Picture 1 (cartoon, rainbow, N blue to C red):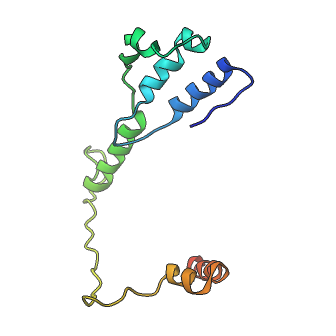
Picture 2 (cartoon, rainbow, N blue to C red):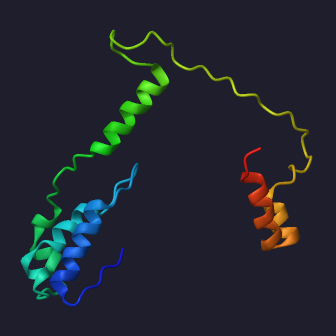
Length: 137
């Protein structure tokens, strides 16, 4: 992420907002550390040196994020897979899907798809094939 502005404090403010809105699921990031750095008065005044991190151990004290969106996604997935958990809801059973597995022969080439059209006939043919593929029947 890159933030630019007319001066350093405004660029830091833009970066703070971008990092607070940024979401990466599943892996740990250094976003809380970067937020702490960007909120330090010495950094905002651009008066830091190479010992800045050593001299400020409080940069490693992170505020836990609320992660509300992930909680909502987990709840929606739970309800979709296992059905509603309240007696006031419908008595619908969870969906059971048994997808058909296409039969293939070992060693046979894959079926022709849009990638092969792109490689063989070029981008214009790919665009035409893509429009035909997406268009409703």
